[in-house]
Image (tube, rainbow, N blue to C red):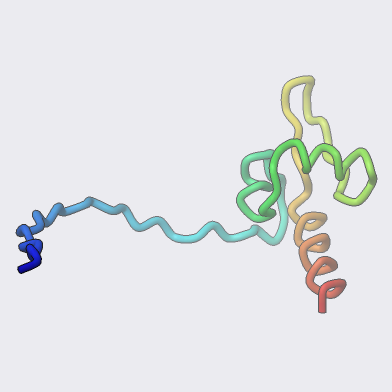
Length: 86
C-alpha cells in the first residue's frame, strides 16, 4: 500500500505592507535620475546610452554634482514612445 503524505499545518505569517501611492509625473519641474527611472523602466546604463544616442532627452546640469531632466521633456518622450508603439 503506497504511503500518503499527510498535510502539515501551515503557519500564517502576517506581513506588514506599507501602501505607497504610485509616483505621479509632475506637469513641470525637474526630476533627478532615480525619479526618471521610476517612470521609465530602463537601467541607468541604458538611460545614459540613449542620451548619448540622442534617443532620450538630454539632462541639465544644475551644478557639478546635480543632474536633472525637465518633467515636460520626460512626459513628451513617454507620450512619443506610446505613439510609436501604437
